[in-house]
Length: 503
Length: 98
Image (cartoon, rainbow over all chains, first blue to last red):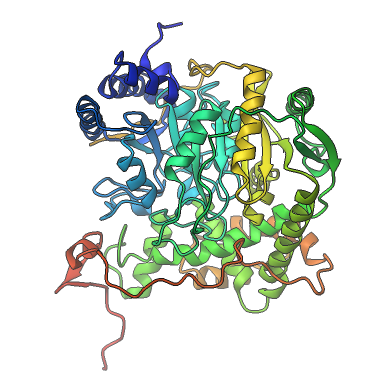
């Protein structure tokens, strides 16, 4: 083991050191950048590292602290930002070659909020192209590797942010979750990941994949950090008409109060055959732990969950085919040269700029929305969405939270599912119902199976984050896993990490 | 297969993608597998169930119609592949008359 540095600490531990004067934001940022330099050739978590800007931002926080200005709990803390949130003056690719040279003229609301709170953004992290994938292999810039075993995927689509936080490149990360893209990589990388209630966090400046499902959320190495980060980015935004006005954003004040008497529903449909036995074993131990902590567990059945995956893989592609129509070579991004006319230009631009999974989903969505198929596919999927929502609403009359595994497997080898879309889609089978209903959920580490992390998923009704975090905190504290970064493991070669750009 | 080669070509045209023959073959096979999986929801009885397009029950999000800060024209054009006379420039759209 190498000696502990500031890069090994959680955000709240860093905040304590900053407040006590034993560390500065610049030192914490330098430690994070050193960790990136030491590990990212192998990991490839970042697409762009903004080292100079990060150090400048850190210096400004230190100066404010010296002047005695009041600072929030995240001031001076480094963060890894998924490259799907636009950053003014900093290249934003969404993992796609079609946006290889896209320099946004404005900041996403989440980015402005982070900057206002003094969070130090280290750079932009790798992801499946336009957030479509469950392994980060669909990135146009090469895959990210799982720090636990670099021959394996980190999950996806927010795999870069998850791997960065797990490896100590940053104590905090931001991702987006459309069908599990925060929770599943959090589970596969052994960290905490949160999909907030739809509408709690602004989507302004989030490059859209499926607008009725997309939500921004935090990654961290412990529950308290994740809760603090959610508080920092949550809240109403007039620039996003789907943002909830007057939503409660206090999710931390009752964090440590325990879960005695909490009613927890064990969702039968989340314990399907086909999940890895090691995953099920850790999650079942987790259920016993929750019970020992005072929660009252009872099985419940939500039969519509069986149809959620199929409904999602019609709804999400349908919305994506519409959202991605904007990549036509006119207003931003790539444009094919020497075209005969405008349609030829659009077709050749999209053909050259999109990767296989994006084309597949655009095709699937276009088909599901096309004349003659709309009612049978998209319309029917929307009705299934109603069934999922109703069953969850009924369950919340009996339960405060629902519980199950986050993903059916641990991290799988790079390449294993790359040619089998349906096998890849099954990664999201336990996370998708929450997105369809717009509920909140968290993945919290539950231990290891064959040396690789397993995640326990706690599901809460809309705006039920405070209870969800309270349960996750109690679980985490009782289980007592390390919150230190993992040392890079496995035999994966350094390989295609040459895309990194320093600006 | 639930989706024919002609369907795949048609959808590619609608989606403005010029797929290669190899891609057309692969997507026909892969989309067929995914659509076969979707068959189970096609057969699900859903009479009387209203569709959900969106998880929030909100209908309209009103705000006062007052001007606020926005991008300048130069900023808005800064991301474009080609610009002329303060406008996005595109290749020819309409054929010239012979």
